[in-house]
Image (cartoon, rainbow, N blue to C red):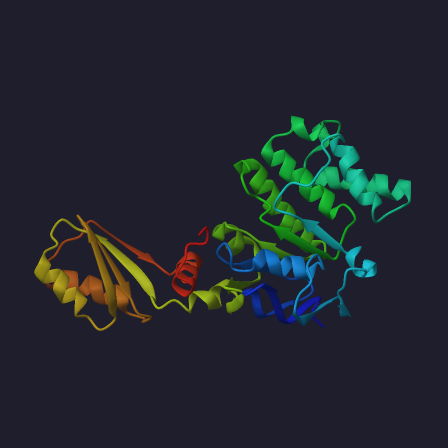
Length: 311
């Protein structure tokens, strides 16, 4: 049974359809990446999942039960890490985490143990008596995460958790997410950083204009690219006649030349690199270097949405 199941979700704002018959399945123990350009409906979908928004049509089940605003038995097993840091400025690091833990756990001894564990988990031991205004952006993000996971939820939803953080904090956050998953948490993750999605997620759903337009593992999504590979030659002997010859090869789809660099995009085939190298050798065109690249997840995203991830 899926831990989270969204079926045929529709959310409208007047005449504008923000979420358009959207389906989502998140299996227990999985890290699922939800990707989409700005305005694609990701945040609206998450707000509907959490019953923060009403919606026109569809159903949402979490832990096999219908989700609704008063489903407190479900909500106590969900951890939410919003994009905007949501902590109390007048409370210390320890007091903030303790407050959020108290919403779920009343026993003070258990709570104290959980809070100390959360502080250690995000590496804020030496800052536990500091106030949020005394923390850097990266440390604030870590505090935000600690507040969302201190009660050890089964389902964790992270919305852009590494925006504007330093590399050290970003690394700490990503490693923490993987550790939470190892400890048994199921995770729904949104990010504008494609490399994070590739590093973390077992499966990815790409959303645009309120609809799912692709989903699968990163390997299967890369197969959606119209380009099988890109082969780049560095040569000072390139000429128009030779470039036209390359263009006529069966598997060549596109060529881009910039001074001595020739970038050749090819269809999926086994012998593209060998065939092009043979062509250079046959016509006596020497090259300094050759580089072979498979499609990236970012390439696929751009192809199927027509937009950069940060658009």
